[in-house]
Image: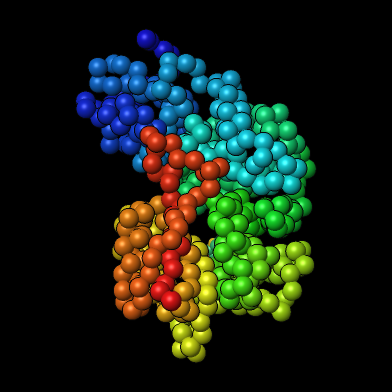
Length: 399
Ligand code: SAH
């Protein structure tokens, strides 16, 4: 079927991943570009034989040269974007997205058929990240559609993630619709309330991917002495204390994060005397605690991404091994270690083998009693396994 769109012609044999509905086309697969597409413009992707395989957004600066909007012969227009947004929001369901003070990821990029588009809802505010040339091309359309699709009037842009530079895009932060949000928004997460700074906070303001796992830690914390390492704004800490933890030591290297954690404790009326907030490097703090002979009944390790790419895998593995080894040494008999990795480059099996090595070297016997993952509002399209990145193990050491 002829179309008037610029066209990327693939090298012979390079259409296989598109046929499996993987939404990325790498630059090495492109034999020729017909026409002169601008960054973000819609292009046809055609096999060497001329078959139309997909319509995609062109990214001239990125190794991922095109990201698929559709595998069908249909127009890529406002109607398509509107249908994808509506489907993504509907999939989250009312219980997650319907409450006025809810927080939830509403749109998760490729997994929702909208490559490069992230939409997180924090109560009465949507926070949008546009991470690719294609997402940027549809910026005004997305901004115009979101209030109608979600019923949320205020839309704030946080397109300041590093990855934008790979697409040749400058960072951009500011209002997309409605007035700017206050610096601290209040949301409900299970049985606790949390403050979120959508202006300066990490990602779009918070780590929504850990929402369900924070609630789970709240259930496991009852009566336990807890260490929350890499605590950020104290999400795990607040859940643990509200779940009946005997005490919590929360550690982060960021003073701003700890200020937010303190505010979150106050907001929930949680006694400061059961909780100590410590500023420091977790690697050093854990060694210091070990040297002092401290012990805990529940340790949460939720470090930042140690490996951004496969080439950083080895260094990352050493980092994970170090902190997990130290944590195992700090656990009281029968204690629990909830250990996470958000590095997409470290798969679940590799992560488990790193944790196993750490237990061995720490001289403890431990069982995996639970496996945790990113929440259901961060779905993984089966044809796009790259969307899966967060994994967690709850390990119990022998008593
Ligand atoms: N558990 C948090 C998210 C943690 S994000 C939640 O559920 O919301 C990772 C955190 O680690 C960030 O707050 C960052 O400031 C902190 N961090 C990064 N490197 C660190 C280090 N070496 N020592 C202590 N904190 C560190």
